Structures are given as C-alpha cells and as structure tokens.
Length: 450
Image 1: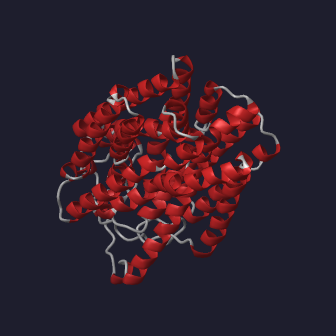
Image 2: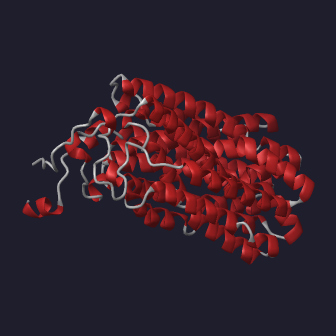
Image 3: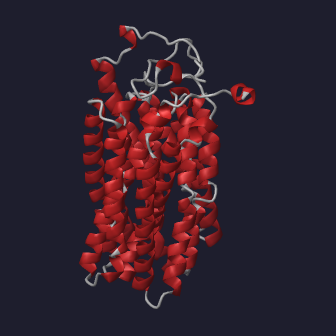
C-alpha cells in the first residue's frame, strides 16, 4: 500500500530561483567552502605540528596517533545528535556557533602543551566539528535542486583539499618561522574573521524548510515526487539499500582521509626521507588530485543527471570505477621502491577515492525529504566518520611495531586500498536512488496494520 502523505503545493514564479538568487547561491556556497576549509585546516594543523610536538614534548608515535583518534571520540555522537537541530533551527546560526567554538578551543594548547591538554582539546574540537560537514552540505543543498547537488557537494568536500593545498603549506611556514603555538593562534584568528563575515551575509536558501516558516519551501526538483517531500519515518531512509551502500563505501574512504590528515607529513618525513618543510609543503599534493577528480566527476554526473540519465549510470558507476582504481593503486604501495613513485601512487589513490564523498552525500539527499535532510545527513556522516576513530591510532601502532617507519606506513595504506575496493563493490551492488526514492513510505500505524 502506498500512502499519500499530503497534497502537493504548487510552486509560483516567485518561489523559483532567479538570476539574483543564483548569484547568491554561489556566493553563499563560496563562504561555506571557506567554512569547510577552516574545519579541515583545524584537523590538518595536528598533522603539521605532530613531529614538533614529539620532539618538544617527548610524545611517541602511538601517543600522536591516539591524540589523532581522540578527535573522533565524540565526533560522531555530536554529529548525529546535533544534526537534528538542523531540522528545527536555521542552519546559518548553527554554522556561526560552530565556527566560533573552533576558534576558542585552540587556546588551551597555547597555555599548557601537555599530552592531557592535547587529548582534551582534540576531543572538544571533535565535538564542535562533528556536525560541521552535515550542516555545511545542508546549507548548500538549500540553494540547489537535487539533480544539481553533486558539484556543490564536491565544493564542500573540497574544503579538505583546500586546507591541505593552501592552508597546510602556510602553516608549515608558520611552524618553521615561529613554532607550533603560532599555528594554533593563526587558525583561531581565521575562524573568528569568518564568523564576522558570515554574520553579515549568511542566509537560508529556497530549497530548504526554514524553521518556523509559514509557507513550504520550493518543491525540490529531485527524484522524490511532491507527495514524497513530506516527512517519513527516519528508519525508512536509513535502512534503504542506497543509504547502506553509500555508508559502507564512504566509511572506507573516510578512514583513509582521517588517517592521512594526521600522518601524511610524518609519512613523507620519517618514512620517505623528505625534510620537514618539504613534507609540510607536499601535504597538499594528494588533495590536488582529489580536487581534479571530484570537480570533474561531479560536474559530469550533474550534467548527465540534468539530462534525465539514471543515477546508477552517473553517480554510482563513476564512483565505483574511481574507488576500484584508487584502492588498487594504494594496495600496490608496498611494492614501489622509489620515494617519489610512492608519493605518486598516494596522490593517485587518494584522489580517486575522494570522489565517493560528495557523490554519495548527493545520493543520500536524493532519497531524503528536505525537512529531514539535516538529520539524515548528520546520521550518515556520523556513522561514516567512525572510521576516523580507528585509523589514526591504527597507523601509529603499525609504525611503532614495524622494523622501519616506511614498512608500517606502507602496510597501513595497503590495507586502506583493499578496504576501498570493497567499498566500491558495495556501492555498485547496493546503491540505486531511483528505486529507493520511489519505494512506498509507511507510517508506524501502517506497519501495525499489517
């Protein structure tokens, strides 16, 4: 039985995005990309200063890995719990509060650089950054219809790349000139500046459900019919094969991303023999590849989707191919001899794997009513991000127990590669947004009636 959840609301000309709103959509998106870049730079800063902290404070690789994982202790919990606020409170205020908290949390490390303070501040930063990606994507999706969300989502995901390409080299220079404490001061100031700009120009978009709004937002030009834009039981979204397949694939990729942001500089320095400054400057190289692959693949996918090509022929197929190529490339790392070739393999593998993050986030938005987008994305990303709780510590343990740091790093990235191939297969087998968006959605009383 298919239950009609309410009459559709006609969309007037005034509800449709105008040229002016399109310009605003991209300007808001640009600011949110900066927000995402700051978010990832706050994560990347730890990788930049890791070796300096080890030398000055006497930490082991296992301790550094533990501190990297500590960031994720409550990251997923806060991401899932606070995401429900996004269904009720305007997203612009949530983004403002989150960015302000990031800046304040940088301060304790300037006073006492002990291991306990390091762990506590990383946990606190994880709590404040847990909802960030879901809220950022929700804010951007409010300005675009569902069939044009892959590229905007790629821009948000590219914040990680921008942080490593543009911000990490600058932080490496700050580290070389003034020490690791100056890096934390720099990021705190940048976050506060963003808050001031966002306070002046941040706004909700026409494709979101505004808290307290009397009139429904514009009907989303996505896969769901007008009747399906009403609220549905959350479990009917979370247990679709598309949601589960997207989750498995991105779980594997995020494990690679979270480990790399902690360990890439150390891998280059201690494993491959590059200098500390060179390692910091090279930190962004894999992210350059991810920018190219994410922007290129999502642009093509959105163009094909706008021509009514099914998602399995666009987002799903493209993601699967990139994950298999990227995973096999990373899996071959232990068999490569020259350091510069190892770096090339890491660049290719990381770049290919990154495609899954924006693609599958857009897929989840396709099967979710706009009123529930923040909470659904929050849960999706919270579970996905649990891999970040595991992989930084795993790499640290493998490096400490290996006969040489290079052997530990190489084995870790081979494991990541094989896991990413499995994730690509899961996406290919399970993800079909057209099928899952069209499935009848039953209320609890309907289930009891059966």
